[in-house]
Image 1 (tube, helix red, strand yellow):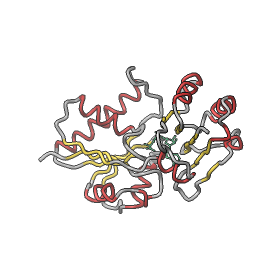
Image 2: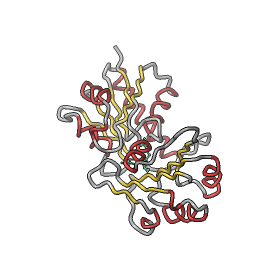
Image 3: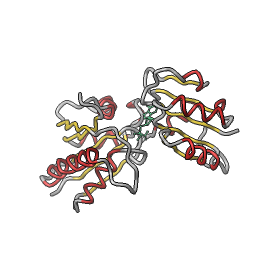
Image 4: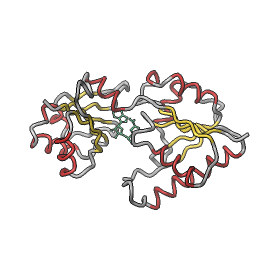
Length: 241
Ligand SMILES: C[S@@+](CC[C@H](N)C(=O)[O-])C[C@H]1O[C@@H](n2cnc3c(N)ncnc32)[C@H](O)[C@@H]1O
């Protein structure tokens, strides 16, 4: 019998925010295929997973995925594509041998997760294997909860925006919505906060750094975070007045 590929959201950091289903799948799968963004193999998804489920006895396959932008509808960077392909080939080998593989991913798999590209690559290869996707608590919801900033009330509209977008595109989206959640903000804080100031929204924004982790920090005045070293795990919620 062939194995099943599980793409499992492990939440934003606190293992207690992982679902029972995610923990159950991690427990039953012997092979954990973990994404890492750095050469030294450090993986936040693994750290979170191992905080809820004993990793001793598991085969941990760490795979480096380069942190480069992906533009949908355009060919992916060759280095990025080859990382997805190598991952898919390794996973297919185990599935074909009847072994289940779990891919723990930060937050929710549906939101900017590398795991989905690996799923797509498996499909491109015509993989006949079963795939199961398990949702997780996204940094979007977790940052809203930590800052007590609701995402949608009544007839409000929400957008999720990578802060790396050009100002023009961000301005357009902010004009269309009532609440915006900015991800990947850490490298562009001065530009983003400058734009929010210009639009009269800087006072309506909250920045949540390392949400749900022990050193979580909430910046209620995002202007104070400009010029500081902000962690990659940072999300901004902007609620228009
Ligand atoms: C590649 S995306 C992954 C999103 C993830 N799939 C999710 O659902 O939260 C990485 C971005 O998620 C956000 N993020 C992830 N973990 C976070 C945390 N613990 N606190 C704040 N933001 C976080 C940051 O904006 C970061 O730049």
